[in-house]
Image (cartoon, rainbow, N blue to C red; front, side):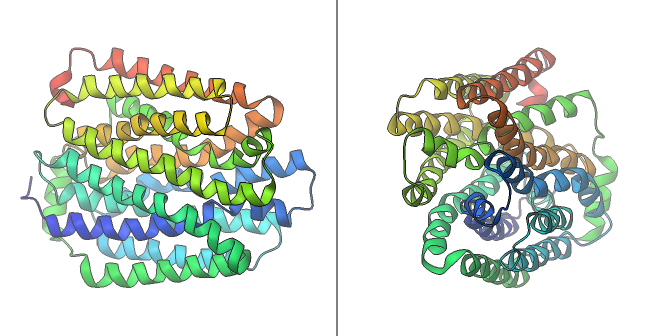
Length: 389
């Protein structure tokens, strides 16, 4: 493993902050935009919301391993910048559509051409060291989380002030600024080093599949809520104008605790066994997922959600850091596809279950998925803690 290159870790993380900011800037008002332009019934529109919001993640999940394998042959920095540029163009075009099928196509293309966090994760892991892996990957995730924290309230405010089209244009412009930032400040590491490292690292195996499943269910727990927030607020008898403004604030609050939990728990991983830490925080987070169904009002609901995300968000970098230093780009891409798949299926699961049942059944269903993945991880890695710690 090469010595730690903190400059790469820092600036690729800052670039991912810019991308995450713009993405979540759009995501918070996207369900309302879809409802606004939809010619379909309320139930049919709800299904469209799930597919449109989840499409990029689903497409990126399928392409993630491919993007990871490309980094052993092509410049990761160039691939990363191409991903930024594709997002710039697609976000701009979304502001000028009035057809849900066209919007869905644009979102699918955005996912296929992205692959950006996979490439960024490979750059960070290749620039890190064994001692710093958990904290560097935690920094990478927290940079994205910070973008998720700041993006929603600003996106909601911009949409109310400039309208949906003005908000899309603003988000596209910010991604372009991030592209320029990446061009000047992210350094490339030697091609020979990447080839040598890739040839000596481990391939995919059963444990990789189990790690993928755990990260996938954790991501679903994190990502399902925004697509059903209009229904959550409607259940609390909140007006639409207030719901749009509250959506940004709610996402900001629970994203803030997700960031704090990731920061603290990734630091704690240097002192305790990661295997036990992953199981502990996973159980706590899933129990809190169940408790969402018992929340009597907005305040208690948001409080439980904030505690839940503080636990669940830390699972992902902890699992990633367990594999990153001993895996090639293809394996890292496969692991990272769990987040893409969770980003895609989280909204789709949320809206699909809700369309045919209730919010309480939705919370319970997602919690059960998390428990099954956690039990599989606990039994499969039992007695092999050194590999994970």
